[in-house]
Length: 149
View 1: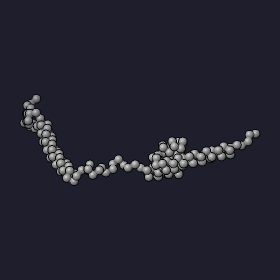
View 2: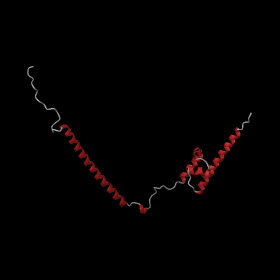
View 3: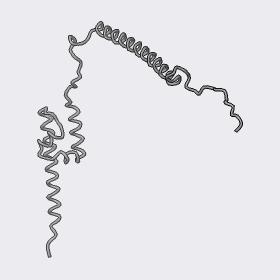
View 4: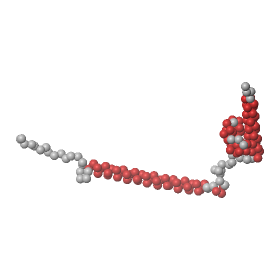
């Protein structure tokens, strides 16, 4: 009969998990101290663990997300320097130009709608009158009298 060595296997697995966690925490602290960008990928590389393992560790995941949020680079949409900003006069001129263009487009739109309505009306009238220019209904003719048979 073989001896049950499963407790040794379980103990070794727990020790490996503890060491892996300590490596990840040490890597995270080291990267934070050195001011390196902190992402799941960079911590995984630094600690020698997989990203999926990091995502599965709730406490480590929370710490990485906090550190990542603290070290966000400034957004690329930062305010441009004063000399590159549009002046109030320039902005007003742009607004006036845009407003004038909108007025012209509205007028064009109105004219095109009127022209379309006119064309559709003429087309409908042509269909009603037919090609002869008269109404497309049968003409009333006097009834023909039929003689004796």
